[in-house]
Image 1 (cartoon, helix red, strand yellow):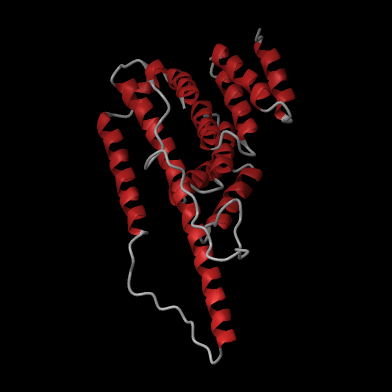
Image 2 (cartoon, helix red, strand yellow; image 1 turned 120 degrees about the vertical axis):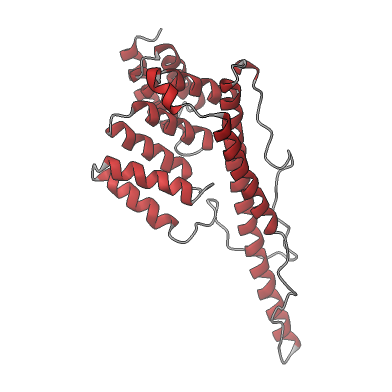
Length: 274
């Protein structure tokens, strides 16, 4: 988070005269914190019961009742894992947002950004784990997590707009995707593609912000190396050569086996990095 905050400072520093118009106020940050508080309260309500459980365990024989119990256990296990994944997504997204707000708050107050430490995990340091199943079942679960209704189709529509060169539509749709599906498993790729769309529009500064959001959202994920490279290249185009060189050099350090290493090396050569 400290590295991400330092890189974001370099992006913000390029705003120039436009900074006065884009700079958030303390009231804006308080408003965002209020939104986060509301989301946390909504999350707490997920753990409140809505009535008496009424599982269907009927059957005319012992074997049929055992089968019904096993089916009910499988259903409850799947629901538990889905809710656990949702909680983890919200915790990750909320932690990242709070870290970003802390950085901007210190920046607004003229504090020392180097003193910022690692942001505490939203809700505490303990890792959230799924409840263990009552029997050795084989629940259906995916690594990526469950997607909301319409989430995949909305992402694909935005990606299609980008592929067709409609950068404005792609940027708008990916921005709306981030609002509609906070904590989505597709968020790192969505931020990356939004950055590419903004680059197509010539808005390099906002593109750099999107690339940073992609990298900090999942710094070890499938799109992390590409996002870090795109961020470094964008910093170079913004005239932040020193920061660009440091960022691009991190691609090879963090992701030595990635195909983006050669591209990062070429970009560093073009910037004259030592």
